[in-house]
Image (cartoon, rainbow, N blue to C red):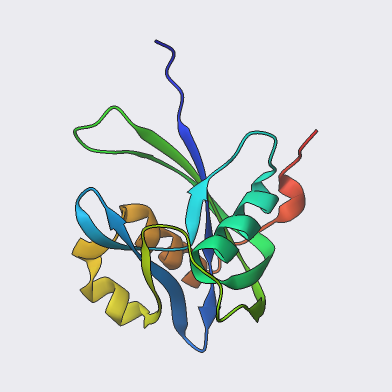
Amino acid sequence: MVWKPHVTVAALIEREGKFLLIEEETDNGLALNQPAGHLEDGETLIAAVIRETLEESAWHFAPTHLVGIYQWQVPDKERTYLRFTFTGELRGHEAGRRLDDGIVAVHWLSLDQIRAARERLRSPLVLRGIEDYLAGKRQPLDLLVSL
């Protein structure tokens, strides 16, 4: 069997001191996450984060920077994630849009609320990305090249 990481993207969006998180059904119950998902065949990382944000939150997202690239191995499982976390701007909302299966709510939460809900975060990548964002970590999008 050939090992390969699960390549994912996430949108880290702040508005008025609160962060956009989705509440989703997982194998371990309800969890909080940024709008995020897997890179699909033939898709760029930028296109993936735009699509995933719309599908999971009904917000139109325009990435402006890469916050970080994170590698995480799920404890007790043979699964590794390679996550590209983007920040950017919201460009509109489709209030009546049907969200992806498994998404039960969209929330705007403060850093304190997110830290208080740490045990409900889908992975440690959620809070780590926010902390890096708040520390000013930003990379230009031209760092990513798709040929």
